[in-house]
Amino acid sequence: MTAGVTVIGGGLAGCEAAWQIAKAGVSVKLYEMKPERFSPAHKSAGLAELICSNSLKAARIESAAGLLKEEMRRLGSLLMECAGKCSVPAGGALAVDREEFSRLATEAIENEPLIELCRREVTEIPGGAAVIASGPLTDGGLAGEIEKLCGGRLSFFDAAAPIVTAESVDMTKCFAASRYGRGEDDYINCPMNKEEYERFVTELVGAERAPLHGCDVQDPKVYEGCMPIEVLASRGRDAIRFGPMKPVGLVDPNTGHRPWAVVQLRAENRERTLYNLVGFQTNLKFGEQKRVFGMIPGLENAEFMRYGVMHRNTFLDSPRVLDADFSLRARPELFFAGQMTGVEGYMESAASGMMAGMNAVRRLRGQETVVLPGTTMIGALSRYIAGYEGKDFQPMGANFGILPPLDTHIRDKRERYAGLSRRALLDLGKEISCEL
Image (cartoon, rainbow, N blue to C red; front, top):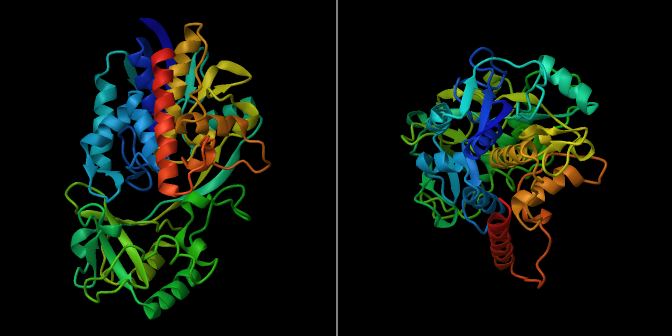
């Protein structure tokens, strides 16, 4: 056994980092400030708490998100194992019961002998080998220390969608189905005709929004991947009809036709007693959410268990300060992981934690750190956050656009994506056998 590495933050990235370190035979001190202190977005004392959606995105390996998760499985991801045990129906996506997901992750961390879980807030950057995975809501003394060490931070605003009870949804106006028949009618679909949609958009765009708190509220950066529904709707009358309310792949059994627009509800838990409004991240005031979202057919009397919220996230200027192994250039024994590095998404954050944890062990042992091949999704994301050359660095999630093209061009998109996935997993297999 080798001692030891400090990990700050018990979110998805921190849990994966601590798990990978322990599995390599190195002791870990994992610091988590909950329940001593909660951020504005966190509600549960559990580790690996899912803040926004309970969806981990597409499950198919031929999709970018599915490829990322398969790479994580092959690298021994703790959270992919947890997700497999608490998945809920979500068509072609992998969604989880968020409370059970957190419980399983917490239990695994607490039962690992090489991990010491310390429930208190950290306000200073530790010495020695460490992984900082304190999340995009990092503030206070630790945020100040990071800012001094890295020469400043960037920021953007992020949003979460509301959750309603299943029993309060009027199913006489809705229908259960998945797009294109994938899955087993996993979504509740609230259809709108053109007139209903037009009225809804008018009220949505004009609804009163909650005030934002932070230094850049006069001109807030809103991350495109988590755009508030009212902001998206303000870009054009059809913006949300071609976005989260797209009706493609759905037929309303009550009419036999495709609706003009659809609001989809996805199960939050295995019992299917709670559903979230897919793509309806919002910053509307709570009363306005109840009023405007109550215009959605089937949600007239919806009982909201959680209203949508918006909060300020921060992330590093990673291309300037981090290497692709997630280490700080100015202090190579210090690693960063999670959304604060500029990866976007639950599994992207967890994957960065895996790599930061693996590399912290290698650095501690005097070995060369590892960056996965750029043909893999994890490797491509690693290179993006460290090597972005543009002027406007923004968070990036898994997508096939960041992978190098295949040697032979394939015109059909599905076949091309399948080819990219096959190449990625082949190259990952070679890396695992040689390096890890």
